[in-house]
Length: 374
Image 1 (cartoon, one colour):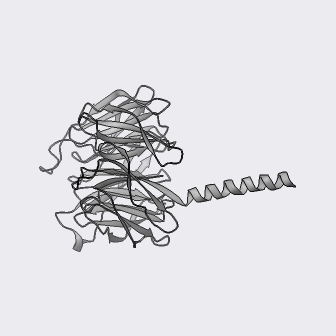
Image 2 (tube, rainbow, N blue to C red):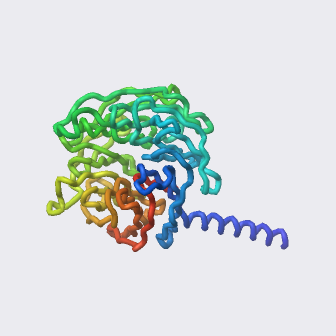
Image 3 (tube, one colour):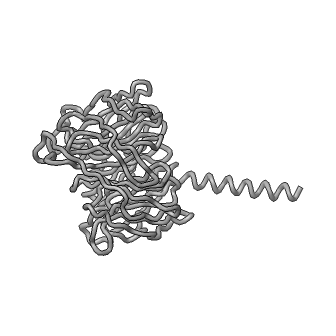
């Protein structure tokens, strides 16, 4: 009986430990150059997934302007597009401690082709991809078993222009990401109104042109997400402040436009507005995208059969310049980063409608421009 009691107690403790862990999400925050003299680096906070309470962000690792962050699929490594100690643009790998409280620099590599505005690993964590907006290039770095970034193994350059003379005088890759089958790499290019599709050779660390999907002329595709069912993809268009929905053929690796829908009602549209980030709930029911200028997040209901979107509404982010919005793992909370107000605000997601409700919770965070949660 005593042995059974001990085993039961151990089991209870394990259940309690898992439950406690599941209640809290770790929030990693990338930043722009701060204006208040704060230290540059990756900040860390925690989100209580029951109450929506967000802790005060604290510096987890010093590194120059970590503009974008990405997790390795195993959740044990964090990668940053940043400035290296010597000032050159590059990428850095960090070890995430077992309790997810600390970051330790693993290694760095220069991009060698300008600063990266976005990065991501493939779905097996074998390669790291970066998009260089300024030089119109996409780079590939292989990752070793421990997550170290190896020297650049692949580089491709985009070509072309778009109808907007101010922003589309050349190619501007703005995002990298793979499909769920981990066969193709997708790169929305703001300068040429296309989503370029590449086949990946993960052993060699190279990519080869496969095709492209078209966004409306002058729309400026920026970031992209896949629906969890793998049948649809959604691209937020920065210049047109819209979302283009695509049907995705996983076998052929092709994108076919379904529709393009504006992020805001006609009355709220203005020249100063520009779309930024896009995210989708893990259940695929709702999609969200942010608009700078209007400083809001728009919510859409997703039809799982057709992929079409229905506008639910838009909500002020209670800050300025929301370059990043992100859902927590539960899908019940959305965080919106106000770069120009040094704020991160918390919103409750209505599970029945997908609408957003401000939780009256907001914290100070220096120049936040990227949020990654685990």
